[in-house]
Image 1 (cartoon, rainbow, N blue to C red):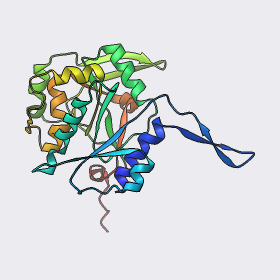
Image 2: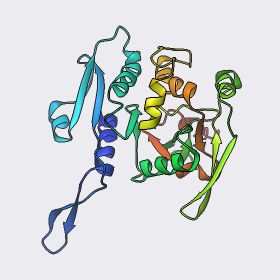
Image 3: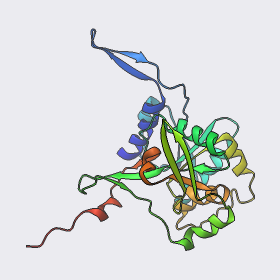
Length: 257
């Protein structure tokens, strides 16, 4: 429960209004946040969820209840919900319930990428885990997949292996990723409309590992060449995975006496 509430609060905190402490009066005063309106919808299977009504009301969270034979297909219900609302928003976000955003410029960076390289390409974030038990603390958890899992999709949409541009006075490099999965995607209105027009939209294809990975990644992988910030620039666009199940592989084994 803590993870999904942290995810929701990250969106409200980053892109909603804020408060500012008046040091003289020791009172909180309203402070304008970014000029972005965010609608948060949590898609659930029946009553199988942990969100309470008080929290949802306080933070303006809508709950969409769907009935599915297999709850692992919830991600496809999210796709349908996004498609139904494709004319109402500037960006459409699919986010698993354990991915926290920290970057108030996240969507500005996506806008910049689309303006620089065209909306026909899709930028995905790099997922990271923070784990104080490993020497580096931070781990990028989505390493390259074996070619048999992704090569077909790379070949079907040929594009540049690397894209380069300068932003914030810094040269940036983006790589045609060999692991497009992030448990997340954010599509502009143009991208959302384009995806819905493709014959494979809504095909329910489950061939990319499990239904979870397939719903989060396969549809957009069939539609767009997918890039991620690469090398030293990997931190340009990140999401925190609120777990340590991948970074634990880096914990040193205990020494033997």
